[in-house]
Image 1 (cartoon, one colour):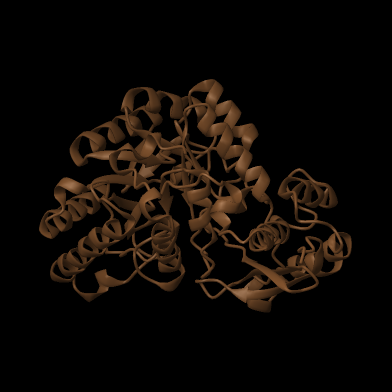
Image 2 (tube, helix red, strand yellow):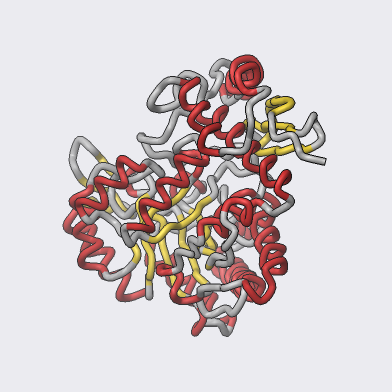
Length: 427
């Protein structure tokens, strides 16, 4: 019997993310209601100013964080327009979503409303094809990602005094996704013991993404702790290191300076600091080292550092901003957050633009995540070779890792774990 690929029903609801705040969940059915695509929409706390608009209700309900308006946008505006339309073409459906909203930044209906529908449609279409989502999007998908595992949290994701947002290990020496997670977990266990002995129980508090939030302020101290844990775990030959600095959030626009661990630095001094950290701590990737409008500074650090420089707030998964970065040599990697732009097709186009111009792609979760593991399928579909989805703890984080383990098993001998060539794996 032929599957009917037209949308039978479309319904959104409020559910809770990992911070206990509301977010949008969308159910989209096809084939007379027999096949259900469901998707949750994540939310960021450390956000770039150029991200697509996230609809929040304001007022007292849920502290102003309710998404009732976004839910109503799906149920009262998008559903009447889309029921009866086909999910055969993701691009055509996403274009319709953008047209119905009618604004550049998705501010009429909210990117969180549009994205929920976009992802749910992709899931429903994959079900109709009888293939997992990663293969529905890319029949040749086979590259698993090296995880950028965030073991120490700071910035807006934690309650300590670290200005940098994430201190990361990359298990590049693993031979598989499973071994990468084994290595990461063993390092995390050693880190817990070191923190407890040195700072007491308070150091075992965690941030939004599951990493520890010890009572320290020095990035050198945090990186030293990571190295100690790695050395103690016995995996020193298999690990490299990275940072997410989220520098926009500790930049003083009026003064044109950054305040890092209590020290005021201009751009040149901060770049010099990064070059020293790279040399001292074996860093291979740094995300958002400078504020989100400093394309010139990004270009300078990219040219002098010799490592992966990732644009998150700089690019916000926006192809127009990425084109400017490519033209100016600013960064050499795109942080890919599907909710920053509002539809799967637009995010996909940004990734393709990056890869076709020699930029790597790092697929990323948000700090306000749900148990939805869809980015695990998306990172494999893109052949990106890198994923950021937090520490190897907490259900909203482990859901993504566990889905990757299933994908690895499904791919069998075809699965490729890129290891230390993660930056060049594009499919």
